[in-house]
Length: 281
Image (cartoon, rainbow, N blue to C red; front, side):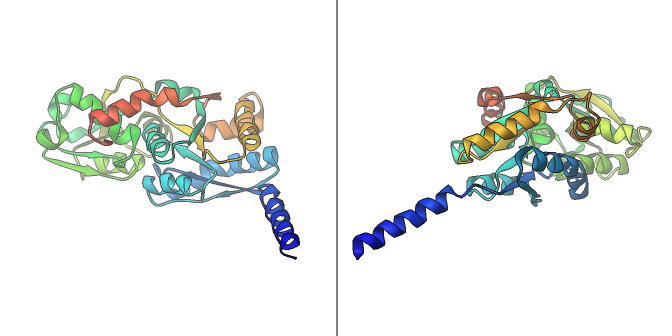
């Protein structure tokens, strides 16, 4: 009887593990307003549902750390991460896989901006001023700008009157425009979008410096995801073609020309910058 029971139990467990995953849990670092993240993801989510045959659920998070922890605890399958957040996820999990990145992410930049009435015209003028980064864990809103400031012999904690963190790129632009802070730094792609959509007044806020290029964002999957599903997701992203009307809508919302494959080695420079800045040990 015991032998039969154990055989039955083994069969049940094997059957359970063989059940195919039917939904895909997706999230993104909150580098823009929640409503904007949802708007950007909606057509991509519908596309991924069609390509995978799975229900796709977008799960918003409150901060960057929550995305990393959700990947580590298998609560997320796929996440849009900045370069630094990917490094954190890779170190935290040991097996997070960078799947694809936009062509634009091979040579990404950040824009240093200042309130037009502040009299700031370059990096040297930032000394003694109030300054805001984006999120602490943001690659383009904190880590790489900090790295380049230090390269230019400007130490934020020593040289700025006050250092703040706005939490998101669009929030940084609005704080500088309003005069809440005299200067700040944000993702170049978000700055271009805000200008194009006339959501920032370039008469009140101006770009004073653009960083050298670096690798940034990617779509990352948890390392324990079914390899067949990983391949299917990668193929879906790589198939997006701007010549196809429906695809162009998705790519435009993602501010992407197209997606290309990426690999962990691309983010070694980000990890080195984070260690140099003391943001990871």
